[in-house]
Length: 561
RNA sequence: UGCCGGAUGGCGCAAUUGGCAGCGCACCUGACUCUGGAUCAGGGGGUUCCAGGUUCGAAUCCUGGUCCGGCAGCCA
Image (cartoon, rainbow, N blue to C red; front, side, top):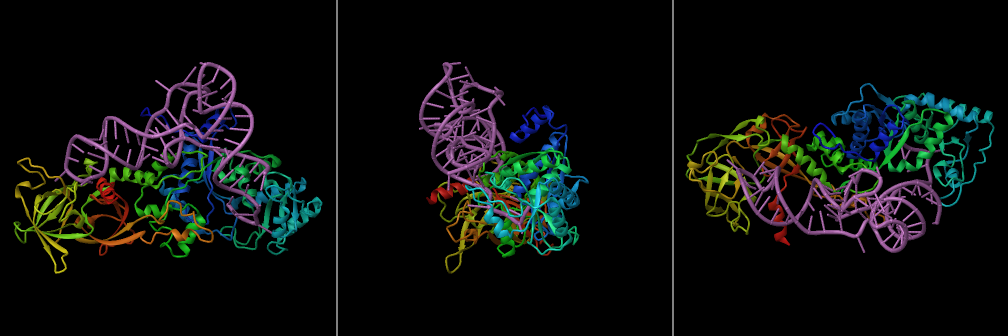
């Protein structure tokens, strides 16, 4: 139970940790988030580090940030910087415990020599192709490398010369001597070191041999005294290998627990494929608001609270499933509803002239900033004779259940007056260009003293005061729930949604000019927006985070069927 | 065909470890409302993968099967 008496969410990982503590396998909890700096973090990583940091915090332990930077050909400081920004933005703190697997290269090297000395590792001269062939298959055992029986002295000598740079890339590897017949292919003498004459973003040219992930990861955890090494399902089959290494070395033994990675409909969660979208120009960078990256979601207007809430709602299991994107959208709406500054913005303007309203007069009307938060106060909205309303808020021939404006009908303009549509003005082609309406001065503020009701309240903006704002309306990046499902010979790009971005210049009440970029907004009756980083006072730009729920949209959809 | 793992309403998860299968999202109905939003009240939807077994009683234990995912990088 927490302070409110509500049960604290638990899951199988937390239960394991609890058991370990109770049974004394570990005396304190230490976890880590171990990204490779080869791309930007996405919401799947947010799930992972919410578990890592969350569990550490709940059990009074610590969570380290460690960069698994063992492959210099794919990594870059740009990525380490973005990763730190994203984790911090999400509200997690690793204090000074910022570690790098590359810091452990010397220790790893020493341990490798120890395994050689113990006869548990050897230098192999087979090519990559030959290793692949001799590894066997899923159903047949592998064949021993002809170099498997080299003497300790020869192995040591060769390994030192590998390190000294005497051999070209790929010429030799250091391999663990385990079991070529193991049913677990990871145990068939896995490669520990490869020769790579590449400059590392941190260690420069100090090394020309680099540890494989499988050799580096478990020992890195061990060095940091990680009690619970929480990772995704695909590493489950590697666990016996990690255990083997720490046992041979006789060092601290972390417990690895695997959970299912996050999948969400209508998007992708693979760093490789996301990079492809960026590099081939399908999106405008890693922080494109259509991307499921944390930087993209941030720019889109998602808040850390919304993402954390989503992560806790989806839970942690070993079931490899797919979360409907509606869950994520519900989490942002829920959060933004409580915090977003309300504004009126007309996306597709329809001119309204109030024929009985004096010309050249401007009134200032009071509007509530956030009905969910009285502390947010009110603001003034200018009102005049000529207004814009939303095109879709008028129908010359209203269908059943359509409550909005129509000829002869009366509706309320939010925070303003009741108006009645008296005349529809059309151009030569029959397009509606203007509505001529009358207003009822007695309804100022939005209430009728005689108690009469209207069925609809419309948002509006004064034509004389409207500020043009570029709005970017985003739709799903893919047209299908599972973009990875493609016919033979095709790839996920075939499912890209050509309409994932629609730019519309909206007419917005002038209050928007006082707001800072990044602030959460709601354009009433439309959706949640936030001011983009491209926004300037002269040219405001707003991204649509997510539309508002709309029961009218559902009714319309059903009527079409 | 080998090994590892998984299976509970459409989706995500629970079920005090053998005791009336619940919750969130989605969906539907109604109330309320100056956002067709929010809120509130209610509703539909389950062969708990299948078949046997143990038991007064099985989502849970046992046996056998089915289906799905992962693993054959000098990637992580």
